[in-house]
Image (cartoon, rainbow, N blue to C red):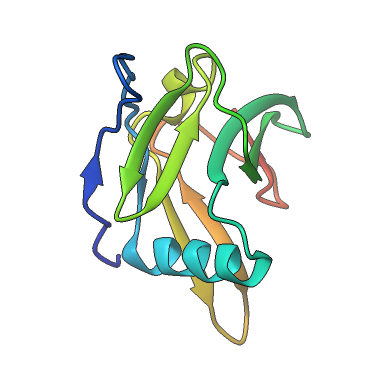
Length: 126
């Protein structure tokens, strides 16, 4: 696995910010920075969430978000702010976000030690 980016817990002026156990590899962080540069946006965060659905019970959501909601857990990885909502934190603790760019696959992946199993398509877990 690629080295992870260095985390730093960020706090807004006077606010206490809760950290989460999600990490992001340097490769994935570089890809996020590249995508944000292409969009011309520096106000977006990478939000990782778990929602009910899919054939195994839970699905991952990974998207850019300009909002920071109450009880969000956030960690900055070398300029990439990764945000996890409070409900998703227990499901994602210890998960690692990576980016693959091979002839077989291109995209972000989530290696989650909390997933006891997944469906054949790999988009949902339980």
